[in-house]
Each structure stands twice: as C-alpha cells, then as structure tokens.
Length: 177
Image 1 (cartoon, rainbow, N blue to C red):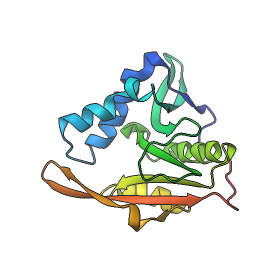
Image 2 (tube, one colour):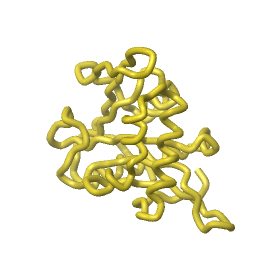
Image 3 (cartoon, one colour):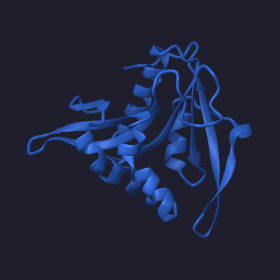
Image 4 (cartoon, helix red, strand yellow):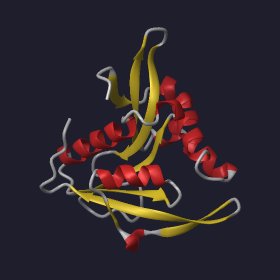
C-alpha cells in the first residue's frame, strides 16, 4: 500500500463525504431500501456512539482524499447484539470504487485488528453479505473464518439475502503494520 495512506478518525466536516462513500459502496452490491441506505449514510449519527475511521491519501489539491471507512465500537462497547465479551466488531467497511484493488480495505482491516489487540480483545467479528465475495476473499485471506451460528437473513428489495458472520481469533496471530 502507498505510504501516503493513513487511517484516522473521521472529522465532523468529513461526515457527509464519508457517508456518501459507504452508501455508494453498499448500494453497488445490494438493492437496499431507502431507510437502510440512510442509516448507512448517517456517519454523524454513528459517530455519536462509535468510532468512524477513514483511510485517507495525500492529495496535492485538497490535502487529503477519503478512500475508505469503517465503524468500530468505542472501548468496552459493541456494535452488534451478538458480539460477545472480549470481541470487537466491525461494521460498514466501505472502499471507494476508484480505490478498490489497491489494498486499502486490507489496510483498514489490519488497522482494526491492531486496535482490537491494543484493547485486549481476543477476537474480531463482523458480518458481510453473501454476495459481497470480494470482502469475503479479503477476510478469508486475513485468516477470518465463518461463524454459521451468527448468520441470518435480511429482507432487501427483490428478496432475501443471507448475512454471513466471520471471526478472527487474535491469540497467536501476528498483526503486521
């Protein structure tokens, strides 16, 4: 990954841009209802109770360009009801279409693994859509495995989609920079 990429908390003035990025990333993979798309886009609302991170790249014209985002809980909190004590969950990982294939998503996930380890968590967990095969390949390449007992179905426009659950135990796992 390019050395000019860094991961940091989203700033309030970036909430709208970050929300538009994650909405576009999800809308391209799912036919989602307007209510859920609005929830995905509501970075300002999410930032009141969790940490929204962005991956940014130096841009000579604007200073920085947002390439990706992810939401993680604040220390001691959780995002999903099925997250167990000692686990840290991730939500709403989205990579701008123009930035895909550059290792940005992997860098964001690795950053989250380091955060989880620094917090003393023993496992990182997440959910992803069954049709999000690129995300699944990324998680599996990093060592995540499926957690079938945490999977469920959601209603989307045009039918039902399976939401897959993945987890990665941090014990004995080296999390490179």
